Length: 124
Image (tube, rainbow, N blue to C red; front, side, top):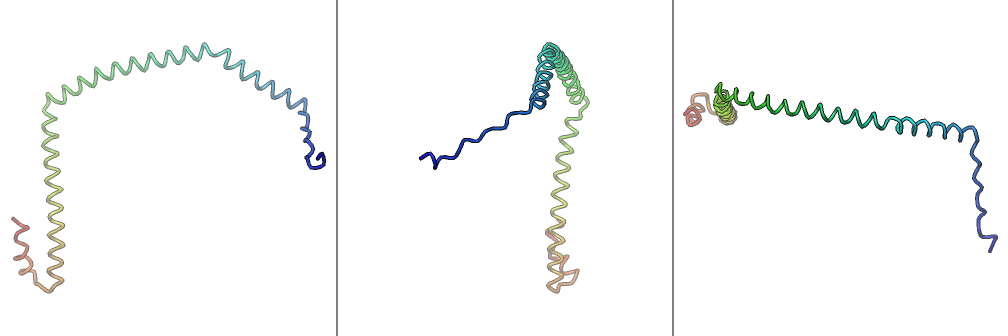
């Protein structure tokens, strides 16, 4: 039965110089992050405080801007502009459909006057 079992591979011993350098890098990283943990916490706290302060200022300024926007009547202008843009888009769509119908009528052999007479419903 011993002949059927593969021999256990022997791991190569680590090179002392590489192992020593690896331990040195690990110690350097641990010392850097361990020693500067307090500095990192202070920096994060300062970042949080300044972001909170700017956020509070933003909400106050945004409220004033919205009030000015409404008092100047710009809100009503935007509503009218939306309706005008929707009407323009609808008109462009209708013009495209009319052009397609006109081309179809002309390709069927109708002249311009007959095509215009049939497309009178689009012009109302």
